[in-house]
Length: 187
Image 1 (cartoon, helix red, strand yellow):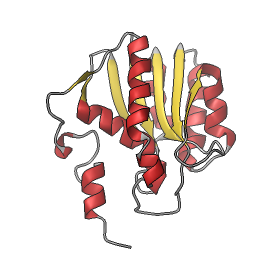
Image 2: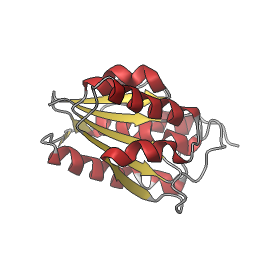
Image 3: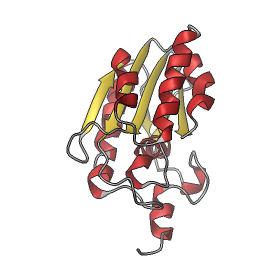
Image 4: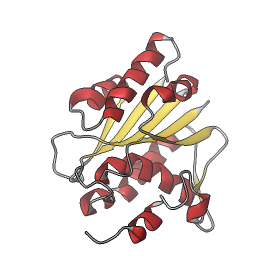
């Protein structure tokens, strides 16, 4: 069983970075079994095809415009996921990832289970901004939901004795949530 946990989005556009921040937090606070891969997919779109094709089960974290109040979490399952990723596009990564899922399906290498944990964004126009308070408040609930899904798939993530240092993160040093927020100039 190969499980891919994928965070997609752009850290530089405020709430658009929610998916990447969620996967970053899983990496920092939990030990992952060898059957699980955590991936900061950023805005890579079709470049993620190989990873999607190799996954038996796929859990995605992303900011999605569901037309709900800001900060609302929503779980979408299996065949409904591509529809939600393309329903109301907020950025180019959603078009690219919707195409990635379609390409995986066309090649016959599509995950047998697909879950999307999405949060309704508040702010997307703040270039260089971080997560807005209602979206940031949903990081922990989103992680808990993700942990439940992973456990139901037979992958139990164990809390680390102490969190990893920011330099040990999935992304580039200095782009972790704490460093990013403390390094931003006041606007």
